[in-house]
Image (cartoon, rainbow, N blue to C red):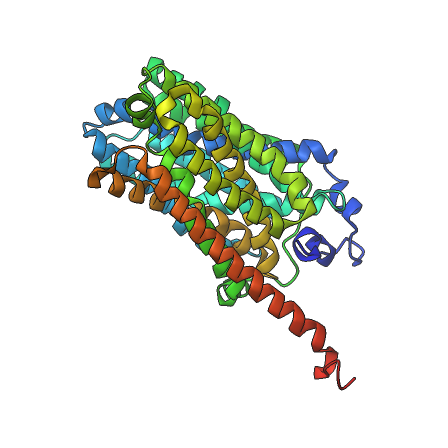
Length: 429
C-alpha cells in the first residue's frame, strides 16, 4: 500500500494553516486503540444486522405472512442496498468531515433497523432492508480511512484489519445472540437490538474518535474519477469473482453438513461457529500480512481459498472431518477481504472514499454470485458438495484477475520509472 491512503491526513490543515502530522491528527480524542475499538463496534453492528435475517428467516416469514423463499428476498434487498449505497454515499459524502460522516451513517443504521422492527408487512420490510444496506459499504470505507490515518507508521494493514474484526466477531457473538433473542422475544427484537448497538457506536465514535477532515479538495466528481482507473475495476472484479467461492459453500452449509456429512441438525451451529471463528482468525492474520505485502497477501488469500474449497469437497462426506477445511475457507477468505480493502484504497488514488467503500459492494456481488452458482449446480443434480467445486472455479478466475492486475501494475511501474518530470525519459535525461 502506498502512502496515499495511509497518510492523507497530511493534506488537511490545522488551525494555524500548517499540515498536521500523524500524531497531531490522532491526539485530540485519546488513545488510538480506543478509536479503533469504536470503529470496530460499528463493524460489529453491521455484521449483526447483515446476517441475523438468515438465522430468523422462518420467524420473519411467519411474522409478515410470507413464504420462506419470499422472505429470502429480504437478504437480497440488503445486498442490493450495499451495492447501490457505496458509490452514491461516497459521491455525496466526499466533502464531509470523516467523523461526522461516520456518525451520520450509523444513525441511519439505527433508524433503518428501527424501521425494520416496526414493519407492518413484507413490502415495508423489504424497503427497510434495502435502506439498511445503503450505509454498509460507506461506513467500512470511511472507518478504514480513519483507522489508517490514526495508525502508527507501518501499521495501516493492522488498523484496517482491526476495523474489519468487528464484522468477524459479529458472526461469533452478535448473530447468535440476536438470533436467540429473536427466537425467544420475537424477530422484531433482533432489529431493535441492532438499533441500540448503532446508538452505542455513535456515542463511542463521538467520545474517542478524533475529528478527521475530508481529503483536501475532495468532491463527488473527483470520487467518480476512480471508475476511470483500470486497477480499480480489476480489484473490484477480483473480489466479486474470487470471493464468491466462500459464499457458494457458506450458503448451503446446512444441507451439506446434514445430507452429505450425515450429521444431525445440531452439527450445523457448530459448523457455523467454526466458520465465524475462521473469519476472526483470518482477519487478525490479515493485518500483519498486509503490512508485509498487500499484493502478495491477495495471492495467498485467493490461492489458499481455492485449496481450502478443494479440501472441503474431499472431506465433506466424513462429517466432522470437514471442520478444519471450513475454518480454512473463512480464514483465507478474510485475508482476501482485508487486503482487497487496502488495495482499493491504494489504487483509487485521490478518490479515497469511493475506493474504500466499493470493496463491500464488490463482496456483496460475490455473495449473490456464489449463492446463485451454487444453487445452479445443486439444481442440476450434482449434489450439495458441488458448490465447493464451483467455488474453486471462481477462485481460479479471481487469481487470473489478480495476475492481470499485477502484470498491469508492473508495466505501469516500469513506465513511471522511465518517464521523468517534465516529460523527459531516462534515456534523454
